[in-house]
Image (tube, rainbow, N blue to C red; front, side, top):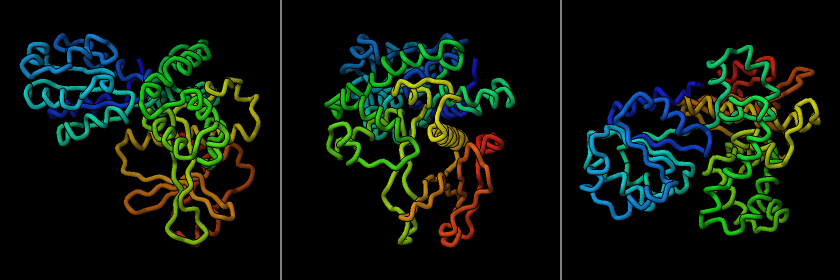
Length: 375
């Protein structure tokens, strides 16, 4: 069993009397994590919002009825809570009226769950995001050398738990994930009225990882207006399929000020939606560069978030097409990174950046040193 980095923070939050909200895409291991934590306890009540009788149970339920349902259990787990109408107020009943019960809530759509939970549990909750298994978690599970050897494999098949734990079955598992789970919650949302075009949009975005995206151009490509494209991308981001990286600017005239890039939360999903699970060695140099950038960006985000780092992230580019892949700011200091699969010659930060930000650090991340960047 792969030990997840969130296990200890979640245990600590429960011991402090806080409700725990765990967000993450379907199949990333939310239920498995909780099962591992509570497996030996007999005082845990499991409720799954995907089940009709559970949703019915919460309809117009009172605190008295909730106490009867919970009984002598000390932990209540509400899985896929976004499916339960008015879930925020129902959870508030538990935290307000049944104070000696630990509450854990999971959801695969931050858009739907946040609407009900944020106000209702203000000051009473700790929120965590669980992603597919991270490079750091796999190093702890095996060892650094073994995981470095798997690098090319991971950039094709990704880190979904079932993919990682079933070698040889990756293609079948990813096909099921992409076909059956990827859009399961999204297509139920009122914001998505044209599911076929949503699928085409995801495929178009998968072909543009590491590139600046234009909502207008994407709209023309898939047959949607720019505002709908932006709305759909927002839903995809809040469903943990992808994330946007904005451009960095401190008001210098030559810097892009409102651009963005899009990256996938998992490369296996990215490759599956475009139907390309070919070996890494069969990829073009341009494709390898995109995979490398997406891999590093995603794993760096996992690393920073699991560490609880208060870091802001951007990419940087000028009107003259000078660029830096990642700019991070923490405690007022800028650190910048350029990602190169093959660093044939020394790489320096663009002079226009160093002139504007002379105190910023700069590092080139390659297959030789990437583990230092992610551990």
